[in-house]
Image (cartoon, rainbow, N blue to C red; front, side, top):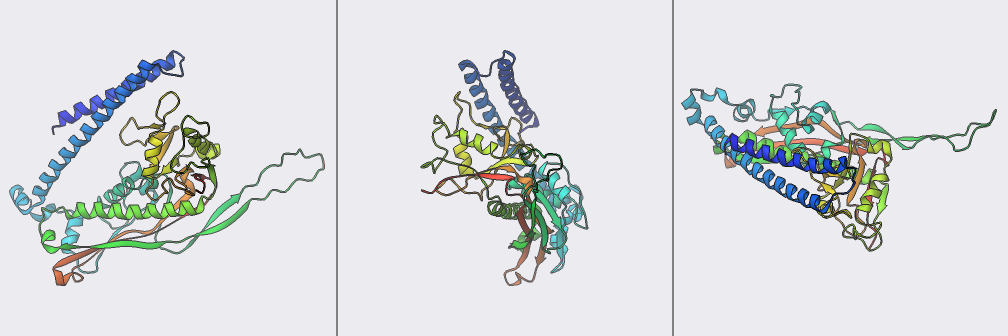
Length: 408
């Protein structure tokens, strides 16, 4: 695919998005809160065309990336290096470590919260320690992309795995409703503050690679290990966060009506459909709703149900992002897909909303890569392993609330 074709698709997509905004702005300028039937039809047509352009653009970029990967594989092969007179000096630091490190040598990837947040925002990340530049960024870009919850939580990194007592306020001091008379006693109102331990546990995996593939520089060992480790470990960190969220955010914001177990009920019935999402949003107080960490969280199966909801005027409740890379919205708030959350069923909590900064996700010691030629010696393999020590805890039970379903 040519760059010119991709540019044309990008311009088409952006033009359709601008046309969509223009239709909505036209109604606003005329002081109308509702769109006419023609305007709604026009919006549907524009949205369908924009989604088609997005799909074509994604396929074009995927084809372009495949071509670039093939070219890079050749450039990194012995034939390619010989053709360009580069020899083996073009190998990346990570690929060189794979081929030349001795058994038991570690490839450490230290991290810090600033770097992780930058990864979530798609900005370049700074490095610390002795890890080669580039791999750290790539790993955590993959991790965040495959684990949307990590974009919103409070991330903490530590050098060791010692348990950390975290302060948690369960009751806040408040002012009494009654006025205080002159010389009158001032009423007591104490906050309830305790601590909760934030510990870490280790997860990881090992993979055996045939030495023939390692010796063949045309095989992108570095990219494969980075993608696989980043996604797997990133999802594992997010899984720990999801488990801590379900255990620590104990306040139910709204419960579906009796008998409504596998969805949100009838959109045309008061108190069902999108009304439940509105009630869930407003069950969380305004300061939490204004936080940078605010978002809806739900599994893919729950998201599929919400996507089908429409308002009384036929508008979808779920708002697709107009700009690639931005989150989709529900009631103006971002949505994070969290595979570990419940599907709709009896006595479940399929949808969550609130300030996810109240969820602390900790990573101790960063990501670790290690290799051993001896472990797979009998099969002529080199064994790599990826490890992470992670933990999570919710600090404020009122910051995030759940939509719950009743028992069957």
